[in-house]
Amino acid sequence: MFFGLAIVLATIGVSAQTAMKIADNHDWGTVRLPSVGYLETELTIENVAKTGMLKIIEIRPGCGCTKTDPDKTDLNPGEVAHVKVKLNVTASQSGPMAKSITIRGLHGVDTLTKIVMLTVNLDRVIHITPSTFISFNNAVIGAESSVTSSFENLSNVPVTITKVSIDGEVKTDLTENLVIAPHGKHDVTMRYTPKKAGQIYGAIHFTVSGNGDPEDFILPAYGQVTEEAGK
Image 1 (cartoon, rainbow, N blue to C red):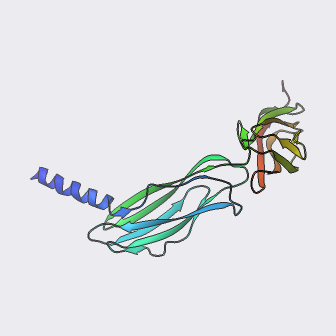
Image 2 (cartoon, helix red, strand yellow; image 1 turned 180 degrees about the vertical axis):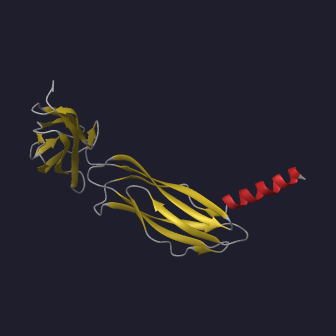
Image 3 (spheres, rainbow, N blue to C red; image 1 turned 30 degrees about the vertical axis):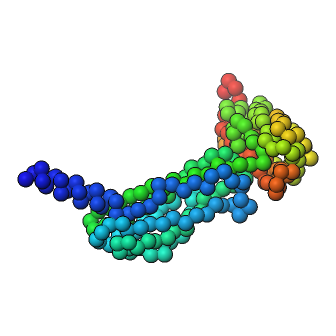
């Protein structure tokens, strides 16, 4: 008797968990940075149970995502809801990205949860290593800190850097109208001499053109400044 009851309960559990059908992930593949500042797709949520209404009770986007309300929240068996999702991308990002959307539904007394992964590989006109931000580690008042990044042109045509500007007190040797040859590299150094303790905030802005539409870049600067050495 207990064995038979266990089978019934297991069957109910499996049925409840499979009542809400949603794709595990959406992958935009490799794309260039969109000028609108986001990538968009539409997720479908289907009630695939044979009986019982599926009620969508929550759609929670992770950091860097937004969503619209579903076109319907109460789904009879076989019905589908549609939700538009945006993945926000900025001029400071490149390479692989992964975010998530959490969707919760109610089928009978069972709460169902599904996490949908959103992935993309941002193919920028130049590749910046080791990272797309500037980290001034262990900065000390009165002492200059420097970080060097490598700008690589992966294309078959030369690219030109223009519109160089700086937020904050970060300095750089990145020059206006710098040309990077096809498949060439250029090292760029950022420097900062803190005057007081606290957080470092700043950014370097520039535009790269020559391989498709011009692309804007932002290299944010971060760090923590401590007192002078020995104090």
